[in-house]
Amino acid sequence: MRFIIILLVCLLYGVLGAEELSLTVLQTTDIHSKVFKDGANQLRLAALIKQVRTEAGGTEKSMLIDCGDLFQGTIEGSVSQGLLSPSILKACSYDAWIFGNHDFDFGVPVLIDAVKAFGGDCFAANLVSSYPELKYKAWKIYEKNGIRIALIGMSPPYMEQWYAGDLLKGLKFRSITESLGEIMPEIMKAKPDIIILAVHHGMFAPERLDDNENMATLIKEFPQVNLILGGHTHIDEAGKRLGRSSLYVQAGKYAEKLACVDIVYDTTEKKIVSMESSLIPVPVDGVEDPDSERVAEPFRKATEQYSNKIFGVSENDFKSFKGSLNSSWNNLLALASMKAVDCQAALISAIRHPEIRQGGSITGQAVYEMMPFENRLCTIELTAQELRAVIREMMDFQKDGNCQVLYGLRIDLDKEGNCLSGPFYPDGSPLAEDTRIKVVMHNYAAAGAGGRFKIIAALKDQKETAFHDSGILVRKALECYISSNSPLAIPETEFMLLKKVK
Ligand SMILES: [Zn+2]
Image 1 (spheres, rainbow, N blue to C red):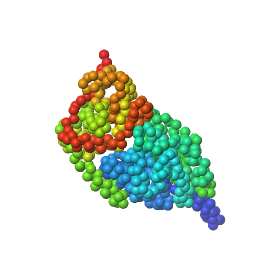
Image 2: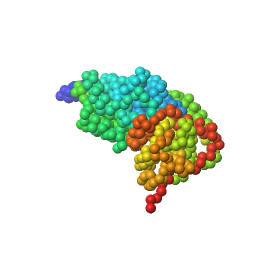
Image 3: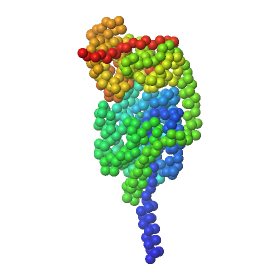
């Protein structure tokens, strides 16, 4: 009797147990070139990845995917022209990298180089590209531990709301749902066991963007997608169930977390038995991966060199005049931008950098902190009326730090941003209503700053405004202005004044 029970158990185990296969999916996203910073960084993340992947049975039984925004966010990212973080992905044997919006910051040729440095698979199912070298697969089947996984990769659909001008010329980013609808029939034909969508997009789009790419809606239309790996919004999502049986996971930001999804698949029943996920924090004092460190070393040297380089000196301290609106940092940024493209007026991001307060030597580090983005200088010709409307709308974003400050022309506003008088030239004469004035802006603001500034975004597409992308990096303009005008004495001029209405 005992023998029969043992035999039955063995048979049952043979039928049920042997067909259950395991797969671990690891995800990182929005690392933003945090490689050398203290605490959690990509070098410590790399060490954690290798440990977790070994425990999961190695590359044969696991997939490792990055969902984008590798390039921008630190001085090492800028100095390496984005190359640093993708090189570390290679050192960690990532299977795939999906491009985020910031991965296009340096333009197409740099992205192509970074893809070569990465060496793994890149996907761009919703990218229509006129560059033969920048065309990537929409999806691919991977075989891991006997399981066939279809991986689809997509970039954010709203790119034109972040980049104005020539940077993305020849590229078009389509809707996620539409692109998915087109490729799903061929994916289903390939009969994958598991379908994963890796995308640089969050659960929900921010309010200011059209939310037709909501993940909960998407999963209703495409319930065959088992797992969505998201990004972009910088939130932690350890695992949210979507629809009947799908899962949404997002590994936060800045190399702080590694997302880990353990899947058990039944090959007889042809279905997922279980899908458990978690976010593993990167130990803030953990070891750094030696292979990744070796790859990063030349970039560390180049970064130190740039950080310590002295571009010039400032005779006065940097300070804010009126809250976030007028400051000597803005004035310096505006003067440098105006000089580089020969303009009399500027609309420049209101920056607050309490860490650069004192005058004296201006190093590469300080220049980077003044302009941590790869923005380019653009010009646009606006009438007084258009300028007032543009400023009125931008003032709505004063609190979240995305307001633009006028320089070279004075304007008086009430607290809501309505124009009380102006714009005036510095000598006090008003801007004639029937003429246009050339204003320099940064390409991100001219694009509407991610759906915030709709008026300027629409004006740039009108022929009369003669919108032009100079191709000059704002940071380069700053470096150039500082070194050719040193010692600097930045005037403490307040161009945008908030006035109390009686
Ligand atoms: Zn990001």
